[in-house]
Length: 184
Image 1: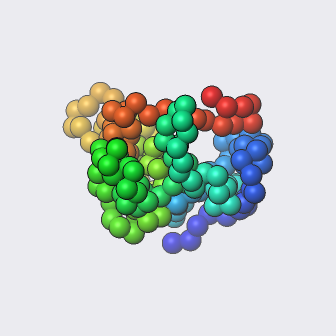
Image 2 (image 1 turned 90 degrees about the horizontal axis):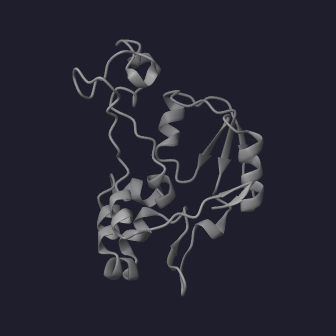
Image 3 (image 1 turned 135 degrees about the vertical axis):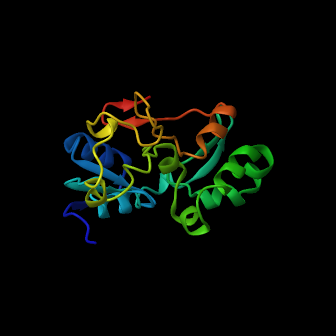
C-alpha cells in the first residue's frame, strides 16, 4: 500500500518548525518516530499535504536536569531511552515501567515520549483502512450513530492508549508547548 503524496519539510530549528505549522495549519502532520503516523498514512486515515519531520531538532532529543524545574525530557526522546536511563529508573520508576509496556522493542526504539503523549485515541473500528471501514456503518467519531467499542453506547468510547500519560500525571509532569505565537 503506497503513501499519499505530501511535501516533506525538515526544519533545522524549532522556530522554523513552528512557522511551518502555522502556515500549513490543518494540512500538516508531524513525524517524530513515525510509529503511528506511517500506518495512518498507509491506511489513508490521514492525508496531509505536508509532513513535518522533527528529526533535525536535536534540542528535542535531549534530557537534562534544570535546578528550578527538575528533569527535562525533549519530545523526541525515545521510549527505549526512558526505559534504560538510570536516573529515570531510580527516581521515576513509574515512567520507566510505563515506557517499557509500550508495544514491542522495535516500536520503543523508534517511538518518542512526545508521540506517546500526543497519541490520537482511535478504537479498533477507526484504526483500520478506509476499505475495511466501508464494510460497516460509520461510528460516532465518523458521523454515524453507533459505537463499536461499547455496544449500545450513546457516545464515542475510543480508548486512551498513551501508556506514559498516567505515570506523568502521577509525577506531576508539566508540558512546555511551543508555537509561532510563543511558549506556554
